[in-house]
Every structure is written in C-alpha cells, then in structure tokens.
Amino acid sequence: MKTKLILIFILSCSFAIFSQGQTPSLSLQEAIDYAIENNRSSKMAALDIEAAKKQKWETTTIGLPQISASIDYNNWLKQQVSLIPAEFFGGNVGEFAEVAFGTKQTMNGTVKLEQLIFDGSYLVGLQSAKVFLEISKNAKEKTNLEVRKAVINAYGNVLLAEESIKILKRNIEVLKKNLNETTKIYQNGLGDEESVEQLQITLSGLESTLNNTSRLKTLAYQMLNITLGTDINTNTVLTDNLEGLTAKNIVIELINAEEDIENTIDYKISKNDEKAKALLVKLEQSKALPTLRGFVNAGYSGNNKDFDFLKSDQKWFGSSLLGLSMNIPVFSSGGRSAATQRAKINLEKAKETLTETEQKIKLQIASAKSDYQFAIEDYSNKKQNLNLAERIEQKNQTKFYEGIATSFELRQAQTQLYTAQQEFLQAMLDVINKKAALETALNRL
Image (tube, rainbow, N blue to C red; front, side, top):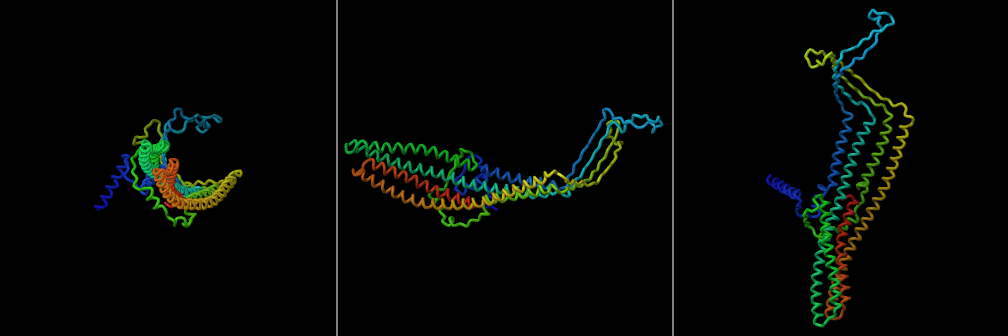
C-alpha cells in the first residue's frame, strides 16, 4: 500500500511538472510514451474513437422503444362554423342552419410509444456503426505509429544538433590553438602569412557553422516539444545520446523480420473500407424491403369555454390506440436499382484498392528493409572514414609544423575531417530513423 502511494505521488508530481511547462528528463522511449498520450493528433484520434462509440449507441437506439409526449392547447379566436340541413331541427327543407361544434378552448395530452419491428436499413446501420468504430480505432493506431516516428525523428534531430555543437566547439578550440601557434611562428619570421590566413578562413567557417547549428538546435527542441504535445518553449531535457541510441537501434534480425501484411495498419484501413463499401451495397438492397413499426397512443382531452383546465372539476376524456404501420416500397422507376449498382461498382473499386494496397505495403517494407540495411552499412563505413580522416588530419598537422606540408594541404585535411564528422553523425541518425521507418511499415510500436 505504501509503495502504491509513493508511485501515485511520483506520477502526480510528474504531471504537475508537465502542466507547468517544465518537462522532466526524458529518454527516447519515455518521450514516445508521453507523446502518444499528449500529442494533439493522438488526442484528436482518441476523441474520434469516443465519438464513434457514441455514434454506435446512437444508431442502436433507433431500434429501441421511443416514447414521446405532447400537450396541445387550442383557443378558437373565432370558431369554425359548419352548415347542417335545417330540416334536422324542424326547419324548412333545402335550408341550412349555422352551427359551431365544440367549445372555444380545448386541451389535449398524448403519450406515444413507438417500436421498430423490422427495418433492413437499421440492421445494416448497426453493422456500419461497428465498422466505423473499427475505422476510428485504425486511425488512432496509424496516428500512434506516425507520432512515434515523428518523436524519434525530432528526438534524433535534437541529439544531432547537440553532438554537432560539441564537435564544432572542440574543432574551434583546436583550430584557435593552431592559429595562435602559427601566428607566433609567422611573427618570428619562420612561417608565411598565407598559413595564418588559411587557418583564419577555416576558423571563420567553423564559427559561422556553430552559430547556425545553435539556432537549428533551438528549432529542433521546439519541434520536439510540439511533437510531444507540450508548450513550444518547454525546457526539455534528453537523457539518451546519439551514439548510445545508434547502438540500440542496430538490430540485424529486423531485416529478416516476417512480413505480416494483414497486420499492417494500411491494410487494415483498406480492408475496413472494403467492408464499408459492402455494407453500402446491403443498405441500398435493404431499401427494397418493407419496414414495420408498432405504436401505442394514450391521451386525455378537455373542453371548456374558458381556461379552466387546471380546476378540479374539469372533465377529462381518455383515449388509447394500438396499431401497426407498414411501409412497402413498390416502384422507384429504377432509382433503387441504379443506387445498388453504383454501390456495387464502388465495392469493386475498394477491392482493387485493397489489392493495390497489399502490393504497395510489400514494396514499402522491402524498401524500408533495404534502407535500414544500407544505413547500418553506411554507419560502419562512415565510422571507418572518420577514423581515417582523424589520422590524416593529425599527420598533416604534424607535417605542417615540421614544414613538410603546406597550409593548403592542412586546410584540406581539416575540411575532410569536419565533413567526415558530420557524415558520421548523420549516419548515426539515419540508423535510428530508418529503423523507425521499418518498424512503422511493419506496424510495430
């Protein structure tokens, strides 16, 4: 019991921190879990499911007993006059007497109970409501997959920016040291001015790149916050690092994973669309069937010259009625047949779309597997290239200070190293993103 209370307290505190716009530290998986619950697209998809549930019940109630009540009050400002043969009252034959029937004021109270006994459209409607609920659930599942992939991409972009800034700062620090040493050598008459200028050009480029990357980092955090469903300026702290995530996301077995096409979300959506089109065919066909309803009416009516209906001596006359109502479609000039044929055509189109979707999913999975495999191979290649670039840069730096290599050769080696560093970071990010794309294609959360 004590453990449960502590857990509830921790969760409450976490919620309070999020609501105040200050997120706690988040791993990638924690970010995914949080976004699935709080991302605005996920919230709207969840609301769509709730709306579909209500619509399902709304459809169900059509076939349940319906009770309505009405109260009618009539006051003849000028009563209607009817003509009756005068001979009924002892008058002359051929003459008519003017008579006003009833009282000037009347009040009627009625309660009506209706029950649908048979309606083919209602039966189809019940099935359609279930399919619509399934479609809403499929939409939520697809949204979760897309949100998951978006969080992974946004999380990775933040880590890429963070790592890029670290590397750029380190490169700038080393380059400033080299520039300082080269400047002293030049001032002592042992070097040339061009060497100093080459290093100054390289340093200026690195500083410009650092400033731009710092701005991109801010944007990357804001994009992540939007994806998480928090305020854009929330101070989000990430606990995973790019290299660690890359190692976790290298799963060779995933390349040979079984392709369960029918379990993919796009196939489910297309299959449900086919079901919906089939139900529309049934709906059009059901319109040729009769509908049968039963009803019971009960009511009281009162009559008076003045508005005395609320007095105890007012007389009320009761009445009740039991009946059945059947509506039989007879002839529609071919309208129902045309509607049915149109629905069947749409069903055939849905079947073709399902087949096409199945083929596209197979291609998508194959492409995602190929991209993921290439990302892993490219990561290994870029890692080797980075090691080589570091060695080449070190050698050229040593040669430069020994007077063997020119400043141009040193700058070329440095540029090659900086390029290799960025390519390696991008290769790590590609591994993470391509794995997320493959998992999305395989419908794996």
